[in-house]
Image (cartoon, rainbow over all chains, first blue to last red; front, side):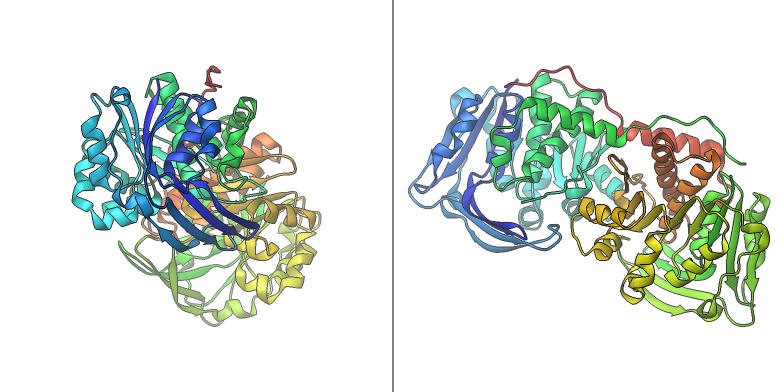
Length: 308
Length: 308
């Protein structure tokens, strides 16, 4: 099945200890689609300004992504500039200019309204509601959010949880949302409000999926060269949802594999600036890293031989 | 095989968001032995003051630990008091009194000198050298250390690496030791200086083992009730080394299982204050949690079906 993705289409200027990239393509919808389109067609809804280099998204079109829902408006594109610290786990935002994104009102084209897999990137929860209002019968809705909305539009976000099957957030966000430091309890808190599945992303530490009576853990892939962590979470979401939609299933075994594909795509995304590593990524490399993930975590149960 | 363990035998006063425990038994050697003695006999060398409630270590004796290398001296025992923050990932040290531990000069009893598995708990690297000088033919030496020694006795620590087969430290420590934020590169830096194996402990995020041309990842076990993180790292080390010594092997498959036993024991240790959870811990519970770890990370490779 295909996926409807609504999120930001941005320009990023990024500094890391290893280099700089100026005004490169980014945003949640771009990273998500760069990963998900490796598995299944993606229909994208977003907004950009006149300054956006739309031709740089051609590689997505070539993969079967439908970008006709990206509206180009008078004004500037959403711009973010940030600088990562020495250990790449923390960053400072140097500049944020919302531009045309400030007035984004997602309009889902008629031809996208029958989509059953939906990814709501990190935008105002009120807009996430508007998206779902326009989709005929969404079945597998995954959504992301951030501290800004958890504080600033909490009521809409809590109501949204009742319409969402999969919440995908990072560990700080789920703790803040639930007001609960324990990750397992925080996930249970979310599940009581709607989502069956809570996927907690932990950056280099991997990710955990909490289902009703089971959970699944995937590590971050230990990389010698992490160039730029920007977009790792959205690439994870793209690998996760892209794989699920390609199977049309949310069975436990598919959810487990989806977690690993998520971590695989997140691990590739950080190897270069922007979505560069995802542009010409051979399927064989994806499958090979998937098997490496298995090798990293698999063990045989021992012959019982304890001392006591 | 049995293990020689040298480390601190302490009294801890701990405050967590969930309660307080005053002057309970702790220290690296106590946590290590509480975990390792579930797998194999442990010979312990340490020092305590006149105030130490040695009878509280009887459960270790009953399991076959030999505590006759714990010297009782005139003065006070090593005492640590700390308070954990809301999310349990950070803590403040409220008080540290070294007491008789300040003049600790480990003397390895004759009957312990033939041990081949050795765990050097977090003490001055110069003392860790002294221990190895007294052991006849140490084969599998694992050692822990901390920021205090990385800064304060760096030369002795670097020299020690040449005598150690397994370095077990946390992620901050290995980054500080190597002066390198990338975990994989930091581990490679350490390996060039001696240890074949670097085990990086990451608290609730699990642990990674770096070997020559492979690595292995074990998650932290998602727990609804983390009471007290004190000693989790030493309990991990005890489960890891205890299992390895019980097999007498450091093969890749045993190292993988050892990592999981480490995380299993670490996860039990934090469920109660002090070593309380490790006192009457049934082997069946250990094996059952080991299988849960497998369930948390295992996945089947997919049928290839990518879009591109």
